[in-house]
Length: 409
Image (cartoon, rainbow, N blue to C red; front, side):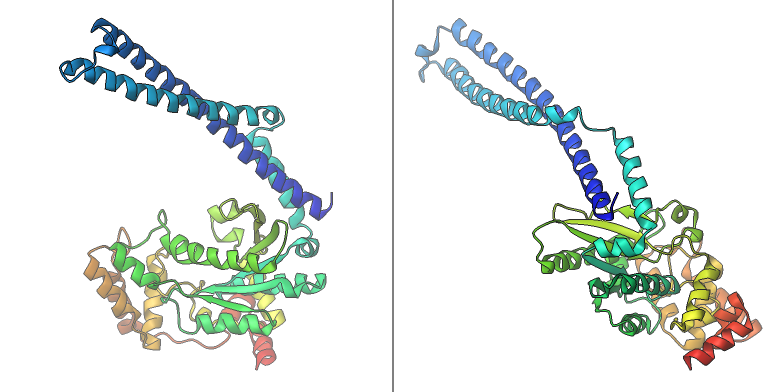
């Protein structure tokens, strides 16, 4: 099966799922309409009997208020009956419209399995996948994984002769390490790719201030409210600019690795983004470096002389917000000590916000306690220091670091 045929099949499977869901909804609406119709019919019969017992509708006059009220209730019930009959007719028509195709719908489990198999096969042929795509968006944090994801995407796009399809997007949350957004732009410019910066209103700290609560692992609003929601309209605009008279194929590239966590290990290399996909665009999430180890990532950086953020040289393994709600205490203490060394205001800014909203940064400890622990370690051990290339020395050894520094000097 060709790449184009596989993508078309995936879309047809998606549409079949929507049709099956619509049929189930129509069946439910039909049952509800039947119940409503029966109830109103019974009520109408009641008023018919009641009016007949009182002498008939022709005696409805102001002098017979009870009878007049009964007649009015009868008229209102007749109106409800007509509405119920119309609703019943619509529900019945909708159900009948889906019924002929229902027998051809595979089960949800079968549809999901078929889609997964097709997407997994497509992921084996990145060059063909890029040729079939209309738009390729690299979502970058400018961290090491995003950097390597960008490099591998660009390499495949160049091989496909489709570099013009690639764009880079970065969300600036306002709580990251200095130079992150600027680095993301330089990384994109290195390959000659258009760069787009998204700056959500209020940023991370504004969101926390408004909610009076910090996010956590179960409510990762920093991802949904500050990254996913603001980027959706941009994707809509870009798809519109393509001017296609058919459904656009969009690849949304993420620097997600399976080795990072148990939940990420379960993610597929290529997955259908059902939330973003619509009639005018089929959006696939492409975890292009899903199978790489951390050492593989650093090897790619070293071998290709890619510019990485100096925060990795401090011993911090992730380039995220200065204070990440998913980080453990050791990570947060080290981040605080780095802030002290760089004379950054983040420890004071975050602890003041924590105190102001009265909500602990983490369930089992406060940021105030983290800052106190960092100050104690600095007092005992002295301020932390690092050198350019220390991240490569830790992961690949001194020789690789020296070679990289010579290459990027």
